[in-house]
Image (cartoon, rainbow, N blue to C red; front, side, top):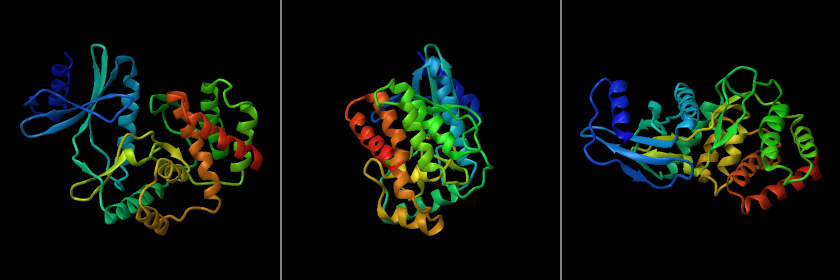
Length: 288
């Protein structure tokens, strides 16, 4: 069994013995990993499991959480440890009891995310390592031009995985460059996968974001995705724009940025995501 290995690893990390007070509790809600709550006499932990050969995915997620956490702007779950036990890889995080939050909580979420996005991180887009978006590789080769980075490493890579489903990839990639050629954002630390399922609040009202696909990018990618699957409450956007107003042209770029996630969802799950992505591609080609 893997649990003795994981509890031993936790014990070594926290510097005292962690003993389970009950069987690991399986959790619902994820479609990529198995998730569990480990309950001890005075502490709890959140554990993700996947195949052993995917340990790099967990290591990259841990690095992303630590990158955001070190900014001291918006809270993320603390990373405890990660590793391999038998045929499984695992990531252990602090356990947080989360709730949906109030209007005032979302106002604070917008404020904290804006503060994260305004941190200067240099002049290159990408990150120090590749990571994943869902279970799909996310390529983060550093580039100084945002239009080239997003065209090549985001849309181009997803089109390659789609194997011709959406037509001439070269034309689509060039259209992305045209739309973005006059947009020159400063690189920001972005969550990378910011939808309502990856955000919540402690019972004290503190905003939390989790399950990141972190890189240095245009901060608008986070705001765009926050609107993709139902959107965040209006107070979030109101406060965000008070601190970090979005640049002109965001409404046009929003659909382009969300095309990345729709293509990824198509490559992972198929279904109606093909139609949604195709609609944006047709519009992109008309406007470029």
